[in-house]
Length: 103
Image (tube, rainbow, N blue to C red; front, side, top):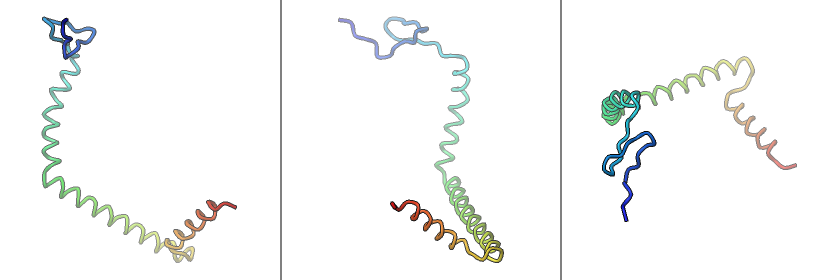
């Protein structure tokens, strides 16, 4: 009984002495030639200390901007409408509980 080849040929491929041989598309060959070196370089950069430091700074800056934006919004809302952002959160929670309660 003959053993099956471990690698199957694509329908357009040819088999030579039991081994599967396939012709890859030209675009795939070009993509692989460019992608492999870029992937290796980016993987080594992502695993480096510089990337981690940059990611940490980005998280801190984002948190700071969000806090500053919330503070400025609250300073604008309070004199004009007479309530704070915290009051709005409580009112939203009460409304959610009231609509979710069976009745």
